Length: 362
Image (cartoon, rainbow, N blue to C red):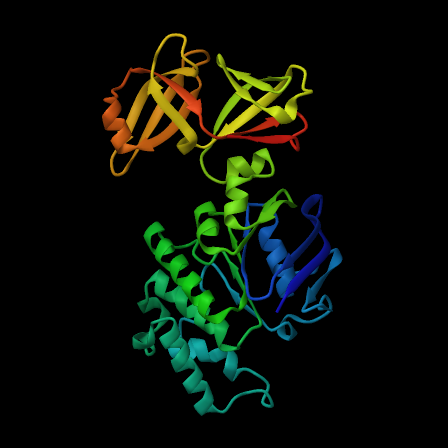
C-alpha cells in the first residue's frame, strides 16, 4: 500500500506540530521519520494511523482519501515503544488477540488462528516462548512479540513509534538488523519514528528528516548523509566540525587556510561556515608555511581500528575532532601536545544567512 499525506497542518494551542507537510511513502518500502524530540514525527505517524486528526490536510492510502476512515478501517498495524502487551495473557494469546476480537463475520476459525500465530512465532524466532507471559521475557523478546501481534491481522501498513527506544544499545543494534531482514521478507509498507541517526541510516530505505514541524530533507540514507540539504541536517546526522570564515570571490578563508568554493565566485566578504566530518580531516606533522590549519593534539583515543583525536586550533582555541586509521596514528608517532596541520578533505560550505546556498568541495 502506498501512503501519501497532503498539506497536513496540526497545532496544539500555539505550538505548531506540523507545518503544511506533504509526503509520499512508497509501497513496500521502510521509511524512517527522523528528528529531535518535538519535531512532529510521532504526531505525523498518529495522523497516518488515524489516532490523531489533522487541522487541515488529507491522508491517502493507495490513492484513496482515508482522512475520514476510522483507525480500524485503515488496516494499520501499530508497534509502540513500550510494547503494550497484555501481562495476563501468554505470548501466544497476545499475538492471537487481534484475530480473536474481529467481528464474527471476519474472524478466522480457531484452527486458522492457531496456525497463523504459530507461523508468526517462527517468523520472529520465538516459537519456544509461546506459553510464557510478558513479564518473563526480555525487552527485546517483548518487542518482537509486539511486532508479531501487529502482523497477525495482516496490516497493509506497519507503523512503529520508537520501537527500540526502551532497549539497551546492544539489543537495539540486534533488533534493528532483525527488523531489516524481516521487512525484506514481508515487504509491508512501513514507517518508523526514531531520533537515533544510526538506526535510521542502517535500517531505512528512505529517510524523512524533520525539524520544528517542517521537513528538512527526504532521500535515501546515503543521500541525506553525504549531501545534506541544510546546516541542521549536517549537524544532526553524526558528528561534525565547524570552520568559521569568510567567503570572497569563490574562496573560503579560515584559520590561515583557503579552500576553493567556485559556486561563490560573486560572494564579497560573506560570512560562511564549512561543515566537516571527523573522518574527512587530513592530519600531517606541522611545518611552518605549509598549507593547513595549525592545531595542537590535546587527547587521543586509539583503541581498535580507528584513532579519535581531540585537536585545539592555535588561532582561536576551538576544538576539532578528527578520526584517522590507527595505523596512521602509529605511523605519525603522535603524543599529547604535538603540533599538527589539519586540512579538510571534503567539506560543505553554507553562506549566512542564506543557508540554501551550498557547495561541495572535494
